[in-house]
Length: 210
Image 1 (cartoon, rainbow, N blue to C red):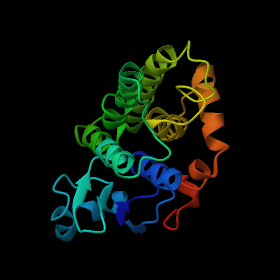
Image 2: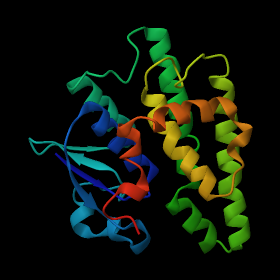
Image 3: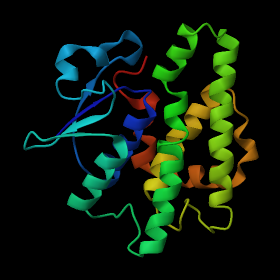
């Protein structure tokens, strides 16, 4: 398999964690987002959105969107499972993950922040926007799992929820968010980061890390 990504992309980070948890190897192909390498014609030919990650499986099929990739990995390599078997619990895990992957991360990603700068917002305002988006999303996520015993987001093993949470907390810290106000999220993060699969997927561990 080939994974197209960027060391600091939180979406690519999610997929790296999933691959590690499943014990799957992949050739990592970096695309420097700040240099615009994701807009190169050769890359747009496989991912017309010009986003990372993109996964090419061993048969040459191309998959885009991190959550779709992770669910495909979970369906084709079911151990360890990243979604509960119980339909209600499964829906709750998906809802938490999508609160990050759909409603939080995209609104503060590189493309959106670049557009805000193009529209004339001062850099301080751009950074404030990104911090606000993270606070809003993480505050909701804190409430969503407030009564879950853990130590992970949903129980005693990592799920899709944890794969989305850990990279988003890293984003929040980059934008100066005080994450100490989310004790339940930090509990899940600590449990996740104790696992090699999460630790080895961290941005600073990647060959293309700057």
